[in-house]
Length: 86
Image (tube, rainbow, N blue to C red; front, side, top):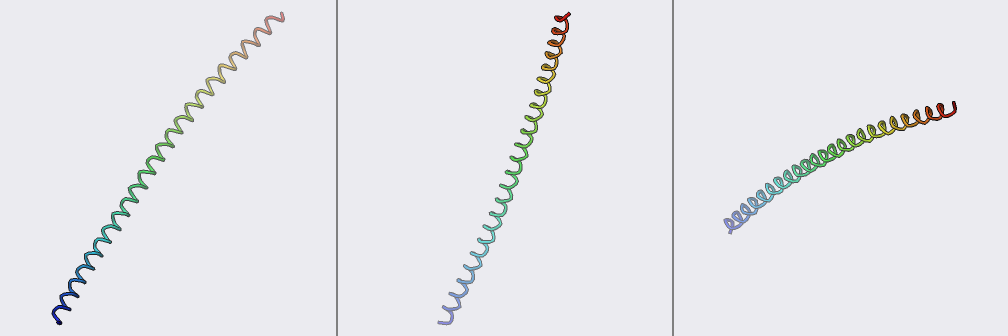
């Protein structure tokens, strides 16, 4: 009967070790996946920031162009008013 208990204890110990190894492996997989997801999210965030910066630059250039056109028209109108009052 002692042999049966020894075998049972050994099998139980082996099974527990196998479960422990699976848990360690799963934990490492989860941590790896979490880091990968974090890296992907940061990459997407950086990409979005770059696109936003590009759009802001484009908007600023468009605003400067409109301002220049407005000032040009304003100058033309002043010239017309000045020459019309002569």
